[in-house]
Image 1 (cartoon, rainbow, N blue to C red):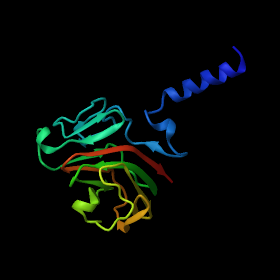
Image 2 (cartoon, rainbow, N blue to C red):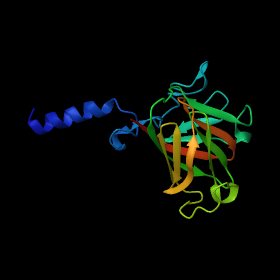
Image 3 (cartoon, rainbow, N blue to C red):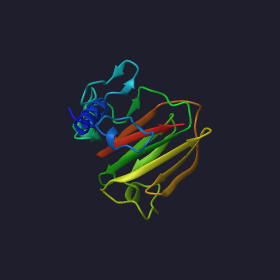
Length: 190
């Protein structure tokens, strides 16, 4: 085996253990969603969805690299549902994710329990003045948590400048109204 073949084989082996989108992550970030199933996510400690492509009530599903919040009328279960990471995050961190909201969709991102509204902002609010928001297209949320306070942006525009947080907690997503899609959910801890 020549040197070039050996290096290529080593790279294949080293990347084979990564989650679906980790090879494209920024340095230091880890994926919270593997793009294939709901591993690492749960409704509670008793209802964990490791290896499953759909939550028990169909409200959340994973397909083709996207975590989908399915409309209430297509799922069986309560109107409002929160999906949580099975891990908690007690240190400072940066969370990045992309979302796409259907018209008037309403969801949320929970950061150690407090909620940041994630919606079709221009229709559903509360951030109706955003200039860089792209309706029914992919948008990026960045949440920087430092010393118990979160600074949150959407496509570079400030949503919340100083959202107070508890000392630790999971990351969560909310199912409320309409279809929401999330992808590239990644976190870099300090």
